[in-house]
Each structure stands twice: as C-alpha cells, then as structure tokens.
Image (cartoon, rainbow, N blue to C red; front, side, top):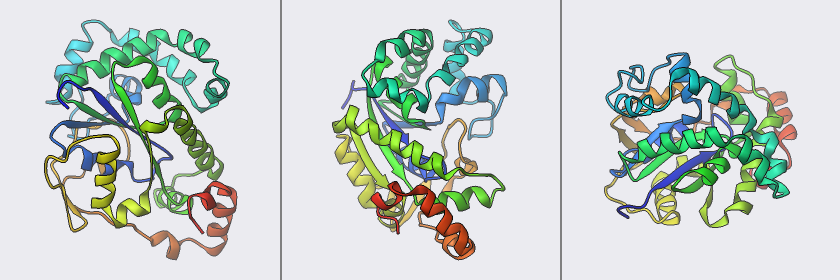
Length: 288
C-alpha cells in the first residue's frame, strides 16, 4: 500500500456515529482522522476553535507544521475569501451532478479546489490514508474531482429517531426532512462511484464493531496492522480532529454500544412523527 494515497470520507446525517468510527480508524498506523475538515477555514482559522487535542491548530503538535506550510501560500484573508465557495458546494447542487453538468460547478469553485488539493496534500505527507468526517455528500464528490488521491465513501446511517433524540438532549433541533435529504444525496454517491461506496448502519457497527471494521478494510483494500477492538471495547489514543461532536475530545477505553435511550425517553407521538417524516428511506434501511 506504500505510496498509495487514499481518503475515507464518512458521509451521512450528523449524530450518526461518525465520531467514534473515525476515532477507531485513526488507530490504524497508516491513517489519520482529521474530523470535519471542510470547516477548517471558518471554524479553526477565523473563529480560532481548538483541535480535539485541546489546542488551537497553530499550537497543535500535529496541525501547526501543516498550517505553517499552508500559510506560505495562503493568507488568512485569502482563505476567508475562498471559504465563500464552500456554500456553493452543497446538497442543492446535486441536480447538476445528476444531469452530468459538472463543468459549471467545478470552474466556479476551481480556486477553492486548488486550496483543498494543497491542504489534503500536506496532510497526506503525514499518512497514507486520511479519514474525513465532513459528512456533506456534495463536498465528498467535489474532493474526488480535485484531489490527487482516491476517495472512498462510508455512508453511515442511523435511525432518524436516535438522531432526533441525540439533538434533543443537547437542546438542539433536527429537521427529519433533512435526514432524508442528506441520505438521499449520499445514496447518489453509489451511482457515481459504486466500487468506492460502502453503506453501514450505525446499529450494525455498534453491535458488531469488529465485523464492521473488517468489512470496511476489506472493501477499501486496506491492511489490518493490529487488533483495535477487543470485545466491543477500544482504547483511543486521541485524535487531532477539527469540529464535530464533543465526543471527539474523548480518549482512553471506550465501550462501543448502541444506546437505545431514545426508545424509552421519546414520547410515542415523537417516535411516530419522526418515523413518518423519514419514510420511505427509514423503511428502506430496515428501521421499523
């Protein structure tokens, strides 16, 4: 595998388990999980939010070296201007992809694409596989058009009622229609790149993590260089991820499990409402 540059891109709706999955993949000796790197300009350069190690990226042991090289070519002001292109790379543009009208989207975002090529290239100097949990389907497709690396997609799916509960307990709101919208767009990546696409249900991953990890590595032709998961438990050495679920700050021994708290704590009305709003995809994915 030496010399081959790959990206594992986790796509799907937020609160679907991408944080724990990327943290586990980060334990592979040849992989580095970077979190939701699509937010790096706004979240880390402009708002000065920290890496999951707790430090700002300019002081982070991992990111500081990459940022130093990046800033030789891109000032903060230039990156802020490029960040405007990110709003153009969103789910609403999948109609253009659907009808094979690629050129307009690529040309109007060319400068942003070159920035991403530089950024991911610098990260790839430190590893062979980048794990990116940015989740946005369109951004994931855009990477495959600009980067000098092969992009693989893990479409991570979780019961919409569990996603709803995860948001609710943190006093946040969820739009069930957006759950369907995000997963519908993620499905489209299978049509565009069938051999590089793998669909994984969070519930299956949580109940059989070792089997799921083996499936991922086999699908993407990646070696197993050490035993990571022991009886549904994993020891996380810590990551250097950008943005995402607060769980990205966790390290040490973690138990992988499918929390069913939502089933007991959501009202019957809430469970029925969310499920009905997420049909037909919820039914297609085996949720009842």
